Image: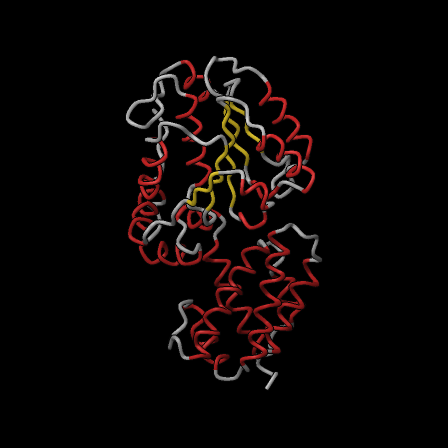
Length: 328
């Protein structure tokens, strides 16, 4: 069967595949969990297919069969050697050598590189020459959650294509079909936690994020009531992904700002409504803004794979969060 894009990508897919000529390099971006990799791989299949029909790879030609078997000689996938690690210059040298070769199947050559923001400085610089001097019938597909972390010179040499976040109804319908064991309320909670990205919501379900979050909310309440210390809470979060915890604090902080200014009367994070409602009445605007700046700076460091001392960082985060109530 030919690969297809997700339903919410269909308009972008049609616009792209109906073009008579394609750019030598694309930059696919969007929220984590909207299906960027699936889209890039489907487009790679389309570009490599010998007989594409109705905007899709046929799934039957020799090229499609080789690709589906994972043995297509004209398709190169570039990813970090280990998840969370950098893409190093050696990988880009492999890419450059690949681009210089003649297509073994006599058609196009395609490279899919993900996540593009994982390239270190040397790797990104090494990629630039290939972007500046593209070879014929060779296509480079970069996939990223964070286009702002790419070199401007890399971004400027790619055709930018942002992939949309689906409407809530579409995302919930996909979740209902993909994770049928979830109830409607659970799907809604997971989708909210995933900022509307359905694949991210499904991934959160796989890591039992709803249950993890219930424990985290209980810990926050105990912290504010002086029933647990920052170090005790930090220790109890040892197995929770740091990125997940930071995302939750960012979302809570946004709610807190809205509640404090009167923009909303109830927190969008319903499980924290009472806590945030109380905090909003006691925090000072300046301290709240300073806290948000600190939190976002450390979120950026975490996304950039900075080597943070996890325990010390979490203790500081929790202490600063609690101190918001005392800076009056």
